[in-house]
Image (cartoon, rainbow, N blue to C red; front, side):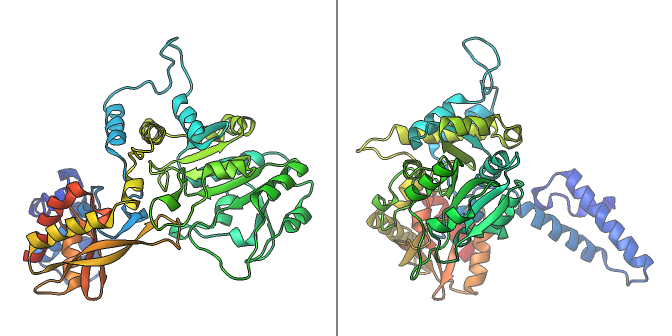
Length: 446
């Protein structure tokens, strides 16, 4: 076993203890194989298997990648990239101690990051805000609190029982809160009267879920938010909205994008509590932002389950700086939030970068056209014309080139279309162009 560990030392860039454990596990497997009457294997075969396993494990280490997919909020690539000021604040808070839960004036214990809640409340137009570690958690916390008593039913349209990423479905997530779903309407049409008929002594809340990752056309109908809010007030129950995307600016003003409902619009439409993600169109870290009336947010914050889902100091630091970026923006200086910059990047600027890259790389590279998307389960109808760097390998297949780029340092992720590997420059930061050139050259020469 020691000989095996020495033979694969350094594989995957992993520490000796991890390598030794892999060697031990493989030795046990070989021993069991032989005791069962299996044929012996050569040492090089066994060592090769362990080395391949360690290399695969090492590849899974979290590291920066160059996103050439054109999908701005790519869930598999970490969704929203953080701005320089945000990253710097997170690094500063992470490197030492912070005033996370201390009142510096009195020296006594204080509430966790009250400035974050205040900034987000101003930004969203809410009376109050609290944050947890993701949007699904926000919805679960809200419904768990509302359904803690005798009332357990949450009314929701059948047309809003959506599936989100990773196979998770809204009904399953909601039911983990202890709520009982009361489905109303049909897949394509739900009216205020449908909600009204479902109201009863067991009703705890009315829930609206924004269909952010798909759209309906044709014979469809949904109640206006104001009408649903009026019904909820009449019944004495809160209207909760899972808005998801977290947009706080008019997305239609950024590029050829559809208008995505904002938190401000939901609250003005009468919602008592609105849940959104921090790492989608808000452009910050993973988080669940709960905005609404002071009374309802205060009650949710006091729920014991809130502590289970609360944010850590790094998430709060990133939320704070992202909110400050929006609040510091002016008409002449848009918010320094990468998602906003990527979606609104000028195509001619992208074309100039692509031309320079293609000139540097030579024959295997050419300037092409592409279509960027927002991603992250938001604005599925919206597409933005973009510019790509198209690569045609002089030898080998395009699939092989794509794999070599993925396994490079840094990894480069693109997509294959029309027999070429396309790298969409909308999602490649200008400061990454030099690293991209080096990575592409290495992959072409391999």
